[in-house]
Length: 309
Ligand code: 13P
Ligand code: SF4
Image 1 (cartoon, rainbow, N blue to C red):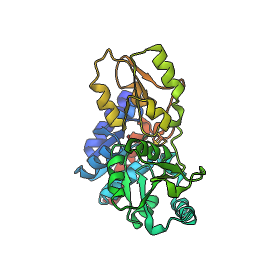
Image 2: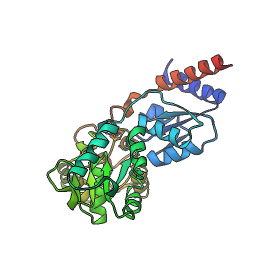
Image 3: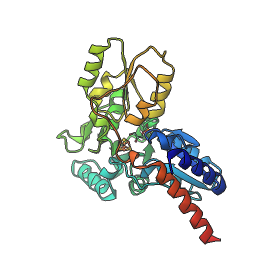
Image 4: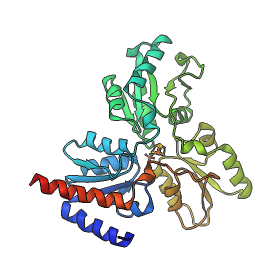
């Protein structure tokens, strides 16, 4: 089947099986086009949890589908690929416990730690954070959540993305450290776990300098998973949805270079939009899902439904 035939079959099966499809902005165009709803991590989780259809196909990475299941356990959530976000894989429950122990050794009592996990983490890490009375945040609400978490008067342990933790600290005028960087954690307001996104590590200050030298009026937008020195030099820092909104409000003649995943940047505007890197910043796991996988998932739902009758 070619892509047009596949798309027709997917639309037919979707109706017949009462399935909604959601896709993150980093999905391939062919998959993105098939979604009933697209959004950033927070928007997708909220929309999917409220959607009335009993079946959901989530085109994204593992923690995103898991988040819907946490928010709406009654829903059948299917993922065409068990694509796991590389950053989310950098921490599990044992690593989390070890890092709490490191802080205890450094003289911070467990009861004085308030953990906050980025949504890009597994359900078991979220459960550990929950056991300690902590919070889950996304890139679009991280600052709000940190403000809330700080009301406890405890030290914030931010996992797994050190860049998001450091960027929020800078934005709020707070101090931060990364566990293992030699800085005494007692001296920091936000203590970050040493995780990162390999895709967003690709953007450098040199890339910003290159574009600004070439086009003096260019604007720079960056995702908060980028390095703090990159975010500090950007004109705008925000979640994927916030970046899209910011760019849509600009006149088309305004040039902009964007520090986030390639698929999203590529479909932003017809012209005057650049990827803030000399390499192609593709998220390997987001790119695993194809139209064929989506079709195969719908067929397997149909098969399962027939067996259950
Ligand atoms: P958003 O919540 O901004 O969509 O980010 C998710 C993500 O994984 C970015 O790399
Ligand atoms: Fe995870 Fe980075 Fe891919 Fe986002 S871009 S899903 S943080 S690996």
